[in-house]
Image (tube, rainbow, N blue to C red):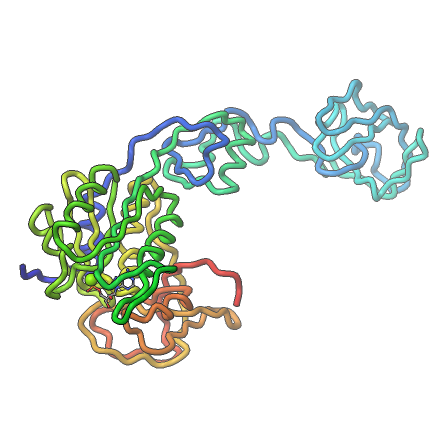
Length: 406
Ligand code: AMP
Ligand code: MG
């Protein structure tokens, strides 16, 4: 089964052409965190809904405070959540707390720290300007405005925004259901006894972590050996109950690469092999209607291929508007020499120095070296034709983590 490797760009295009957003459902506000909006969220009213005080202080008519040290008579006190009984007329003021509605007649608030109050009269150290310390109705969000667009992931700020607009429920995309199959006769689970020649399975954990970071739901993660019958059974069962299946191992050119054989025999293969390093033998197929990624077994290949192809596919299934990682420009800390021919995804650490990022690619970039991932903030995407990059050259770094400063 010969196959000409696709460019990563064409492979991604092929993947996205074979994946569509999940149907939508209506979900109660309390359950929305981590979901993706399937509607534009339109503000049903202004935010803030009424003019209110930005300070604890006194609501006044600015015209009464053209000079420092003026005195006004206190009339009442209003807390957040209350409405003043009366209005503020010339010569008078009203004690007000942050968030309380501005009473009729008032057009400014003077902060408490600039006043002295004896229980009846208030002396103002400063003059006041019309509008000061008043948060105007609609100054944050206007009624009718699209506050959040369809395809926006609902994180803390977006969830909070929907709450402040009183959304009791919202239309979101159904959460994609993902199946994971980890293949390899040599694998044992952490906690099991490892015999000579065996290794601990790490890919199923890499995949679980990567899938969970997308907000998708893992329906099942299974592990099996290298018998084609076994692999076929698991792939069929997972494909039947998932929206997307990701497997690890068994897709390269070895004698015992069952995922490759099973998918070529029973599925529609869209491509096998991408002109990239690491991750060349990536296979993408549809089994029935379900897209399946056969990712290679090398621990770095599996993670890089997931980043570049599976993650965008899952985000598209989720209904997301934006599918790709942020990129920043970085200066190389050192020279890079390599064999041209394939697009290479180098694992880099980023440091912010002076006014720019500096990227370091340390050590051998072998696709079996998981330690190149544990230290990585970003992937540097090196174009196929490039053989040498000098220290100080600008490169693009695709951020795969948003780590704390280090
Ligand atoms: P394969 O693609 O199945 O030929 O595997 C390529 C390499 O990755 C071999 O050295 C495997 O032992 C290793 N490998 C495969 N699956 C895993 C896994 N789940 N965890 C760690 N290493 C793996
Ligand atoms: Mg294998």
